[in-house]
Length: 443
Image (cartoon, rainbow, N blue to C red; front, side, top):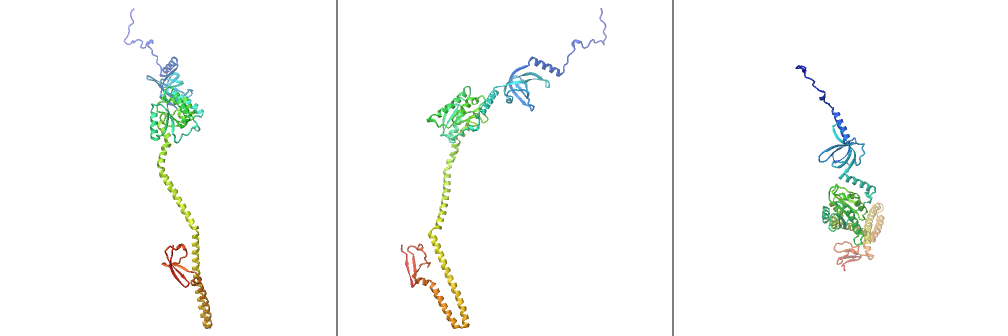
């Protein structure tokens, strides 16, 4: 049978049924992949390191979990009650349990976190926080239980590694600032397994040492070590060390790591220092500061003594002035001066009175002369004679006539009124009623 003829326009069936394609949308493809992942993988545990951590204001936390060869997007929703979610941070190693799924909007697979466990440093941080909360609840961090350090310590206990940098730093500062300080060294390990037990035992050993009568003057214990990672410092975050510090009868100073490092030992100790060197400076501060005071003490004492002496001299001068004002001779001199003033006043009064009477007499004489001159003249002469007699009786000559004398300095002519004014060998002149004589004072 011959084949049917074909024309040039007969192309046959262009799209055979067996060659028809199934075309999916992006959403359909993503949904299929999501179903496959959730069905075949489902819930898994996966470990890795956190990076690109983002905490949104909505409360959801987004981050990437990575290892050396791959990375995985993760989301921790706000409603998921995962422990330690507040401790998440970049660089932490974690173990996560969650559901593998696809976030359709980005077309990427991710892990929806349901549970979380911190590993490595994260686990240590959780243990640190738990012990911290426990001891704080017992009141071991309370300020009122902290004891003051001695101002001028003479003997201290030192707990650290004999080969670490901390002991070199502490000894260097003490030699420079307080070389006379006696140190009782209790060596121990400060890192690794068993270090916490050795530190606690060293604290108890120093307390037992201090109970002996011959060595009972240990005033302070310094527990210290240099810086390091959280794992390196972990011995000081263990409960046995904290309990030993709390139970110590001797005040304890903790100086662990660098300034930014805080350990449980720092919280329970009586005093925390930022570094070993800083601890040594705090311990020696009293003696170091007093050296400057002692050097300045002589000058201070001299100034104080001078001020005291000046005050005493002022007081003595004040008392001497008061005594001189109250001395009997001062009163006697005042009385003599007043007597001289009265005598001078009396003489002036007499002269004034005589002048007044003379004026009156002259006035009367004039009147009498005009009226009856002879009688008036006679009367006035008698009055004048009486006044002259009174004046004569009050004059110095009459005083001399009664047995008194007047003694003067032969050189100056000044009247000598007191024996204290006369010097040995002084030439004096004595006036009597009928004359005078000169003499020289004998001792």
